[in-house]
Amino acid sequence: MPGSGGPVATFSVWDYVVFAGLILFAAGIGLFQAIRGRKKASSDEFLLGGRQMTAVPVALSLTASFMSGITVIGTPAEAYMYGTPFWLFVFSYTIMSTFSAELFVPLFYRLSITSTYEYLEMRFNKLIRVIGTSMYIVQTVSWLLASFTGLDLWGVLVATGVVCIIYCTLGGLKAVIWTDVFQMIIMLSGFVAVIARGAVLQGGFAKIWNDSYHGGRLETFSFDPDPLRRHSFWTIVVGGSLMWASMYSINQSQVQRYISCKTMTHAKLSLYLNMVGLWVTVSLAMLSGLTMYSIYKDCDPFTNKDVGASDQLLPYLVMDILAEFPGLPGLFVAAAYSGTLSTVSSSINALVAVTVEDFMKPAWPWLTERQLSWINMGMSVFYGGVCIGMAGVASLMGNILQAALSIFGMISGPLLGLYMLGMFFRCVNSTGGLVGLICGLAITLWVGIGAQVYPPLPEKTLRLSLSVEGCIAPDMNGTTTMTPFSTVLQTTTPQPRPALADNWYSLSYLYFCPVGIIVTMVTGLIVSAITGGCKQEKARPELFIGKSDLFCFGCRNSESEVSDLIEKDPKNIQGLESPVFCDNEIALKEKDHKEKITKF
Image (cartoon, rainbow, N blue to C red; front, top):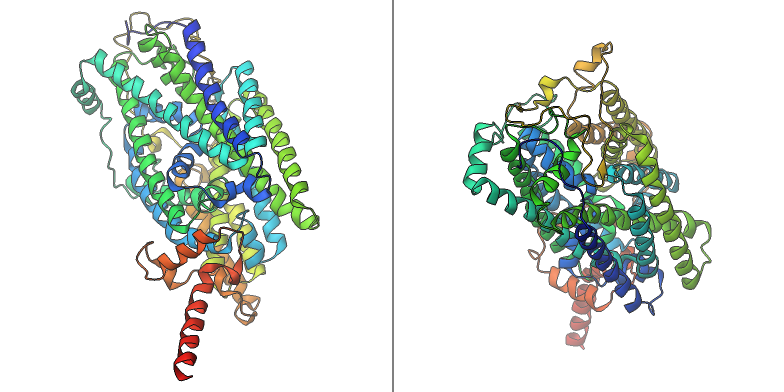
């Protein structure tokens, strides 16, 4: 009986068939796109889809890119153990989407860059560009390590990794985006299957909602300003907005997608549609967690030792309530693996882009388009092999994976601060930018690593109570094996805590990014003022955010003209020669020409 504890069923033959079929179909989409575009062998086509993508597929790809397997199985567990404060991220997604669309899209789009870090050399110098690219590679490796957490089917991982390498190598970004579209549908279908079956078992959504209310899971809004609180309205809306902004504004995996759009309007629209996709995804994940709580409110599998870690809760639920429907557990596992496959394919393509654009092209500027195409494919194979190796490293690292995941936030904050210095402050020079970046990174690594060594006390994390009173078979022998997911059981041993452990190291992880931004910007401004930043030569105006960039798309009269120009000529046009900057010049020349004709 579901919800009573004890062992659950294992995968059936039909589950494996459904799982393999869905993964292979997704790979087939990528291969189709690869074959379809095989005649267009330019580097621009491989890395940016020829800059001819439209808003909807790019939006779905943006949503899927950071939906790793651990996100699919970890977010419902968050609602199960801590309630629905995590749902407040819908506000963060809204702020992040507006911030990225209205500030960063115009900047990157008019510069027509391929690698995000090209901007750092344009604004500062080559050293800062190389450092920024290196930080991104470390950040991406950390994210890949976290993405493989909980996935322990070596044969399937290698097989799907090989297929992923094939379509990434042959099809480039276009193949990745269209595969992401299907994988996103699979991920959402997995959530819907769990929610629908849970509602049937519990007698409707009213029962789920009532159980969640009495269990304290619906206390979403907490306005406690304490920065040590893990999740509150302020930590999520302030800290979470900046953390997600750093992912979507400057992360190569995301920027590469929206600058592949054929017009700036499509690029902005893709971010707003992605915002809606994130709303739907987090809402379904939260509802899945509440469904799980309604079923296990009297028999917590974790306390009852039916599972060994929180990220096994949702897979356990799937096998508990869907095992009698052959194929549906396979659908859910395909959803989790689709998240990982999407993350891997996105990372491969982005890593190839930054390696070629930031390291190889500057070193060997004489390379032809054909040679670059072969290098792109070779680097895809290399990074694909690295990703498969990550699966092995992840299975051996155990609890260190939490540290790997937190590194993502530690690095993104200082990098976003550096970009904001360059975009908004003309007085900041290369020395100030470099010193600010180093100081910001040092501070975030200090607090982040300290938080991993000395985790916050339970009163700051506010984990809600769970019961095992309704378990029929309590305390089974160890952890039950039910689906291809495994995580090392976390054990903690008491250790002396230094004075900083209960304040500085207990800072909410969502504030790591804001701390990095503030330290980087303040330090950069001070050092630039000391080293003569105000006396430096005037920089190119297109490298800064102007007043015209602060309006929503479609609000300016010139926007349609700019979009038309860009649509008609999608080639790689950069800097002051970009249509965005030529628009005013064209208008002035036309006006002058008409006046001359009139006088004549």
